[in-house]
Amino acid sequence: MKISTQNISAIALTAVLGLMAPANALAQARPAPDYASMQIRDEDLGGGVHMLFVAGGNMAALVTDQGVVLVDSEYPQVSNQIKAKLASLSDKPLRYLISTHFHWDHVGGNANIATAGVPILISPATLRYVSDTYKSAQKRPGQYTFDPGPLNNVMVTAPKKITMGKETVEILPIKPAHTDGDLIVRFVKADVIVVGDTIVKGFYPLIDITHGGTIDALIVFCDDLYKLSTPKTKIVTGHGPLVDREYVKDFKGMLVTTRDRITARIKAGETLEQVVAAKPLADLDAKWEGTTEPFKQADFVKQVYTDLSRAKKP
Image (tube, rainbow, N blue to C red; front, side):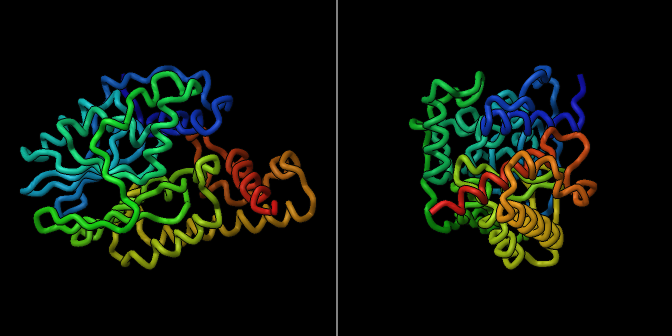
């Protein structure tokens, strides 16, 4: 069974949507993927940095003569493929695993990948969310099945630097954006930034308002990311292909337009149902909605409306 890029995106998004809204119909009636047949795709970004794709969120790996740094760990069902890929890239051990945020398609493999005490650099909020979901009777079947407590978790509450070979790795906490526990990772010499799900390409972004994400903070983050980047910076999205900072500028423009249009409708007294029915982003769909992903304009509008309505409360 071959899994296309489109199907991979749908698998990842279905898992995240199911976590954010378990009753969401988008998370239902999808066949179980054949994880065993999936192969990792590898885009060499230069300077020892590789962008890796499998079934869920994008990963990045830094390969040096001192060892490997991996950003995110994907689903546990593809951990063997990840280990095999890393072994093909380097005979050196994994030295660090960095978790950008808590969604299962980015942290699901942590317990499998970070063996033998490998440090996991993680924000306190992300660790708390993984732990709470692990303990919760409401967790989705097959997800958050490991207790993160015994792992070698290293809390990142302020910018942190790691030197590996000739590369400097910066782990940067950001203000609430996709969630309130997001980290981004900058490979300074290679001029690569890994941003988790704060930036995606191919569909409207998921803003996890249940776990601290907000559209206003995501807009601010876009400004910060643009300033941190150069015209040559390669930006590894959480889902979709590599982008540059001009895409980030366009992404911010879409967010601002969305926020302003929905804010105006809220002020006019329109209900959520009325705003969704009006399709306020119809002119943006061709560029931003995507054709194969399950997350559509209506879902994005619902998130933003809920976020902005909540922000209005004293």
